[in-house]
Image 1 (cartoon, rainbow, N blue to C red):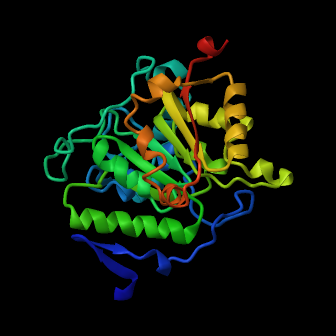
Image 2 (image 1 turned 180 degrees about the vertical axis):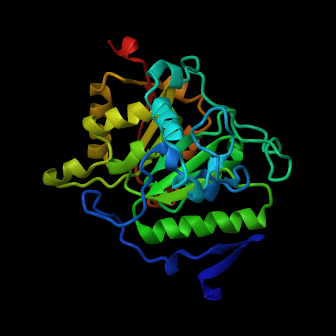
Length: 315
């Protein structure tokens, strides 16, 4: 078992070669993994144990409760609490969405603000704010974790061995750097099918789609993670003013994603001048393993950044 781990600086990190996986996975096929029936059933304490306790009375999407519901409580919930969860998930869009000023990007935070021992909670509402869809080996999550230590982030990956690697990587980093990397996690799931099971309306501030599978054949275009129908689900999960990032090394796919986003009334392109002020942009082509491979091969990348807008703005 020790061969699975390698020394990298002060951290003993897992080695990728022991997590063999296919380069891509068919998102339309049936897979077997647990999926929460609603965002209220998503157990944050399993993913962010430094910030959430396993409490039989806690609810991850109760704005008046910072605890997270443990598995034992799922069978003990009363009809009244279930009704409250349903009422919370059906609130109007404007009440559950945040509206940062146009062009105002999140700036890197002081990593000393949130540590495992100081008792501070990440983010006021204790919700996941960043989602890396198809997170691969977790390179972007690791970089963002220290840039935004008060934001909860999750990677969503369909391949089982890859998601297992990311989980082990995060656990190793937490052990090597006490108080850090507690705000990131990974879940094995199919985001094209189950995204609404994890996020409430207006919950996410940032979504990342970095180097997705191009699915070159026309008959397989329906498998692409960016499409007009799927953008409706992404818009549902994103806060007004939230930013959606895409990058690819396939020009045709880049054009496809731009066309889909341009066609959707709830997204508008972020001008290049404004995008330059976003500290996250420079990570899109350098933080991920796929991006580093493209750079080594001196390949091109095609970037598109869009902002979630309200229905009134898109009218």
